[in-house]
Image 1 (cartoon, rainbow, N blue to C red):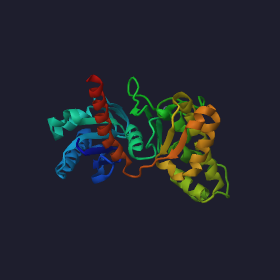
Image 2 (cartoon, rainbow, N blue to C red):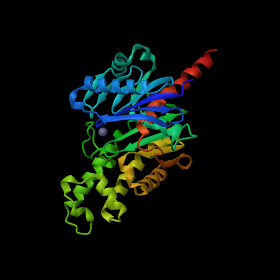
Image 3 (cartoon, rainbow, N blue to C red):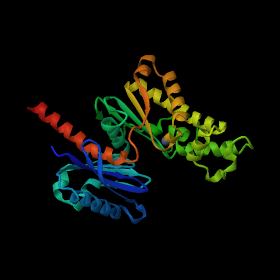
Image 4 (spheres, helix red, strand yellow):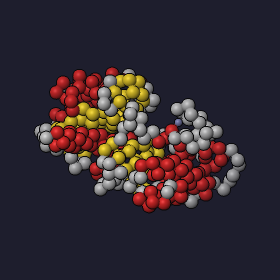
Amino acid sequence: MNDYAVGVDLGGTKVATALVRRDGLVVDQIIEPTQKEKGFENVIDRMGASIRAMLERTDSPVAGIGVGAAGSTDSQQGVVVAASNLGWENVPLREMLYERIGDEWRERIWVDKDTNAAVLGEMMYGAGRGSEHIFYVTVGTGIGGGMILDGSIYHGASDGASDFGHLVLDPDGIVCGCGKRGCVETLASGVAIARMAREALNVPDSTTILSELDPGLITAHDVAVAAKNGDQLAKDIITQAGYWLGRALAYYVDLNNPERIIIGGGVMGAGDLLLEPVRQTTYKFALPNNAAAAQILPAGLGADSGVIGAAAFVWQHHKESTQKYQEAT
Ligand SMILES: [Zn+2]
């Protein structure tokens, strides 16, 4: 068994390509701006060059290449189906990569969405270790999810599972980027938190330190920092976002009976100010037995979580093919 994999984290602003040891250690890494305006072929050319550089810089055999992509993917075909922050639609990423790095990689490249990379990385190396029933939620500009059921990523019939950000909680609410109204994403994302702060500042209030900022430029990060400094308005906004996350998570808890719910993404910079209302609301609205089984934790992997999780696709695939082989013989 080879002990290294290449993990690629393909995002709208940067692409990180790393050589990752099987125990999750990042041995080598190249990070560069995505420069999506140059077009997908240019981005994939540079991804191919970075992957080749990783393969050349090690003497050890590399088991495979995993790519976690921002957006929705067809994980069977290795296609990025729609990625709004890349501006990609139906890009056959796996095929275009092995065309660039060599045909011998054809069967050893796996493409899946970045939140599935995140949940797998957390299961193998982070806050999900020791559990096989995990739901990961990222709360950043948008909100996404990834689920592990009985030890494996669950994709659903058309790779649409875990679209947690678009569960509707308020049918009369604000229009979401997806076209529906009142999705979780419109109520608890970084964008939603910034919007709530702007709206609150429309009412003159000299007691909040947020009123010292330009309302047009206010970010979720500003709100989190103010909340940590004890600002009541900022704390109320983070609590409200946590409440809506908890309302949605309670449905997940009763549907799938997870053992761990792991929350990552930029808004988790608010720490317990976000986690506590999430816990309270989830436990309040879920059935007691299911609530008692579900631990709600911050993500355990840091800045390298994207590449570590993407490399883990390789190990997950090895595990599944070994199981199939054992069942067949
Ligand atoms: Zn939506």
